[in-house]
Length: 77
Image (tube, rainbow, N blue to C red; front, top):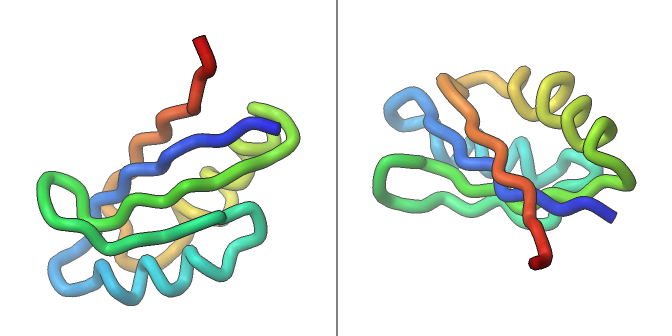
């Protein structure tokens, strides 16, 4: 299982709607509104890195109101 944090910037006033929509995507563990340089932080998981990438590109990035994403895979050193 591969996990990642997805840091999301949204259009002004869209963070809550974006977090709620993303929270319903299969593979998303949590989707939280936050303050700071990012508006929403998502924790997601998938079976493989490729599957995780497809989820981000095909599902997360298509949510209306998102302007930028940054995906940070979790590593266990």
